[in-house]
Image (tube, rainbow, N blue to C red; front, side, top):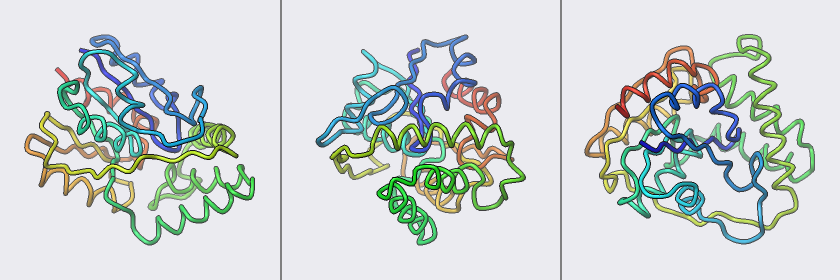
Length: 234
């Protein structure tokens, strides 16, 4: 089975470095960088998340995405359901965020527009690596440094580019393929609420919670996430 791994909005395809080899023991795997992340430049104009995913593979594939990557795979599944065999939604929440998270996002945008990339990246590390239930001292410094570097790279690619994302309404009830919802127990409550909505509205769905992980289980618990995904795909 072809499997497409889609990274979050604070990482790039490197998010999957420890997961990908485990999946490749049984499947053909691709892990693209979305526009404005990693090795993919951001061009001016309107961008389609669905197109970014669908052009990364031929034929049919199972899609696995984290957070922003989850939104991208949902957009792809709704745009071309005949090309998607299964979905794994990791830390996905396409339904809107709490006031607290929105304030963090607004602060990030202010820092980004001011060119203060290091401060913006550190803010994102605190929000999405540490999460709402842990302090910086409770997370390995190597993990924090790695995400900080990926986020800063994204800022460099996106700075000064007049680009936008095409808006897509996510309707879970229209998802017709088997779906696995995965979330970390230490993530924001918004993600748990989104998971509950997926479970209530997607016809063929189940949920798995990974303990001792916040928003990025592919980096925090790669072996466990790979095992969960493989069991679902197989």
